[in-house]
Length: 266
Image 1 (cartoon, rainbow, N blue to C red):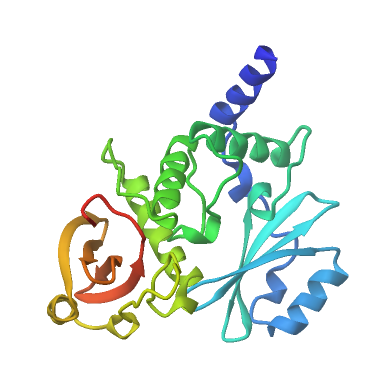
Image 2: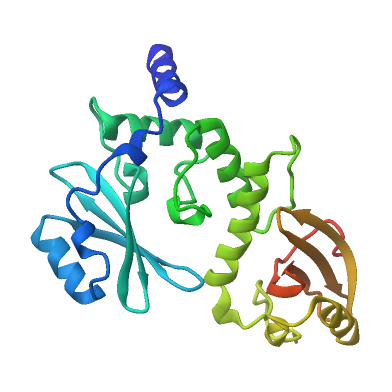
């Protein structure tokens, strides 16, 4: 058992992040195609749709080719295929064993997840600014830890001042905002009939004005942090017990989310 763990760990550390060298397997002719027709063409070529994640201005669709053991990420913008990018097998939820690129990718993915004590990676290639995982596992592991902290409303814990962690945290907060946008800025705990203050209208407001408006609505500032190009402030409402995180970039509010708990929310 110990030997097996050692082998997996070695593969994770030594195997290159080869996926970016994979070819898109003749799919470049589909770039620019309308999404329905492109999807039909993919299926006719043996590709299987795995999942689709919604981004800010586009959707990211992941497809798997069983015969080739290949995974691609397709950006869909305004109803058309905008880009097609090869990525790792775990991005397509695949646990492939054996020699070669696909097996190595899974070993690397397993290694990164093991480092942070997770079952599987939470982030995918499209969560990165350039649409690709880091070439080294240490950076991708730090990004994954930051992404999970941001996604699951954990406090910013960049103990080693890691740039990948900072970028991951920012991406995780953005992903959380997209996944919970249906709540319209209301409480995340949904406990009983407790009244809450709707803050959804503050998104895209100028930061200075938003701070004043938060105070007018009964919130007090209880903390803040800087992450990459964005900054985050934390607010607490003693009456409604809302604990809110506000993300600001370029002088405007990017997202407002009730995170439930924070060290200053009491």
